Length: 328
Ligand code: BDR
Ligand code: CA
Image 1 (cartoon, rainbow, N blue to C red):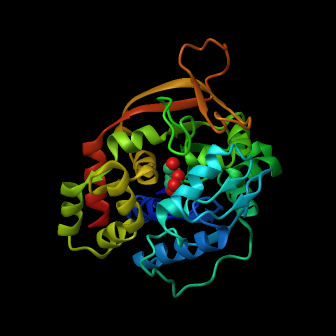
Image 2 (spheres, helix red, strand yellow):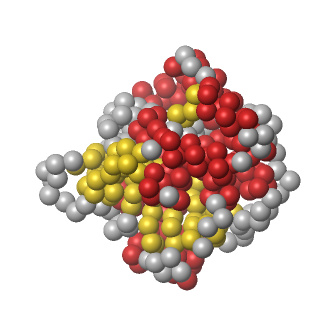
């Protein structure tokens, strides 16, 4: 069995990624650590518990950071307010409730019977579990990197003990989804991202570009998921309600993209990667229009260490097959 730890800011696409890992018979999820990002921490915990509940499994959930390392974090519920906030170049970070719903799960009334999460906090869980299982843990991060940076601060030696870390964050092609330059997870906590990317951890970065290019579900794919007549497939589509409405309004088609699930899919099966390069990635922590940008040094002009395997192309077909298979 492959041992996984998932770190998530559970909103509607994190939930689908978590389902993929929990439904893969070759994977043992040792725990899920939660961080503020899409939604505030407590809501992220509820969403994680309700996602686990849908699988009828018993997976431990650990509460992590409720705000980024050095920045404040506020809730913003409407897209116009979020856009204004980003444009203002305020150093404060904000939730993505305008994209995933105020509850992060499409506002369709998801609740959880389970209310229990572990007493041990996420940082201690990460440090202890990684030390107990050197070179065995695959870490998949689906939210801002605050918890991982704090775990590295507590015990820097874990950077060499994690087998591999798959990061949903940044972009390989210069595009952004929060600003013209930055992807949400890195934008929320660029200081944490910098620490993690500079830590010596073996990182595969699955940027947002992989999501809009290779993990965009449109009417056909959604119909195929619905045709599975499966509780998990229906749950995965239902919770995208707010994102579906937003996609229709902005891009004029029915669908949604799945950044966290394609990252998880790659962690479960590396053959989904069609092209990647080992490169140096710089995180821009400065406030301003490029805050949170992942600057990819394709020509190694800075002559620095290749700290990241950057995924530049993935297989949409293999991703879709995995989604259909594991959610059926
Ligand atoms: C990332 O930000 C969040 O909105 C998603 O859950 C994903 O982790 C995409 O930029
Ligand atoms: Ca996420």
